[in-house]
Length: 137
Image (tube, rainbow, N blue to C red; front, side, top):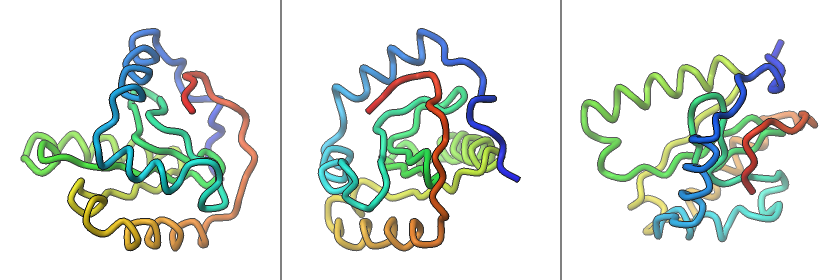
């Protein structure tokens, strides 16, 4: 049984402000992917730079419990990989599946990236979770 999202820890003002900053300064790859998945482009609603627990997810569908991360070079270093592993474990403990794509994947193969996300969404029964604190769009 999935944990209820309303049981997530409350969002701190610092995280809420940081998420807002990140929405206003997305990378080229993030903006490109957002243009393809926003507004029910894949049949579910995605939020960008949304706080889940103590993490800011690049894109998250609360209904499908899918997180999409667009990773720059820092994620391929040892410390970045360790942080990602910890973050992914936390998200998985709340029933989220995490999909990771490099900036290069998004910029050079957007159709393939969107197809992989769509494939994951096909295997996900939709839910109607309550809103969680933290905002985001």
